[in-house]
Picture (cartoon, rainbow, N blue to C red):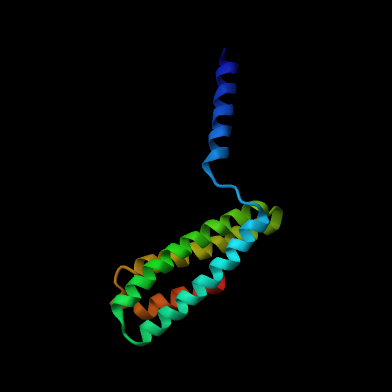
Length: 131
């Protein structure tokens, strides 16, 4: 009886996890990452223009948009890591952790874009190089 209950629990967990995440092929994920990289780079250029012009409201708006794109990029990077194996996966995980620190720092700085505009721009540029 215990084995039957355990088997049902394992099957239920497997099915629920299979449907919990959208599964993209490696090629689809790579294409999505390439497109997202271009959007992020364009937004960073717009952010830089607004930081230099001291346009605080635009910096705030663009930093929020960038944060969403950064989260999307992190999700895409995690999918990519799941396709890798061995030493490459370990190295990619370390790289992902660095990217995660950059995004977290960007998130904290975006709470006060007026005081942190230059640092926001620096973190955004760092993300572009990491992603």
